[in-house]
Amino acid sequence: MYINPKVGSTTPAVPAPKVEQNPQAGQTPAGGNASIASDRSDKVEISDAGRALAAREGAGESSTLSPERIAELRQRVLDGAYDSLAIVDEVARRILGRGDL
Image (tube, rainbow, N blue to C red; front, side, top):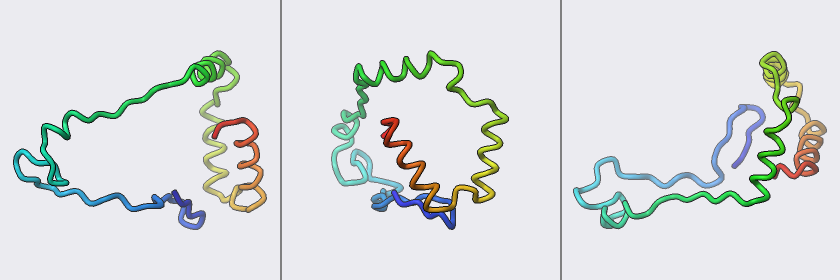
């Protein structure tokens, strides 16, 4: 994903494939059989470490931001307070240091 700091939007690194709007009956947009495509499903598994981290973060009330603080941070972003390489570098270092990635 690319982030364009001048526009403030994100674009995927690889464009999404085009999908037919009206596939033929019994077929998926890729031309496969609809019954085979309906058997596929997404699945998510959360590790024990992930569960422990979520429990640890959810236990502390001080970790949540007040609506006032969120509004203040949002306004700072809109005002361009974080549009410098030094700030981006510091944020990236803190994210890596906390293990959020």
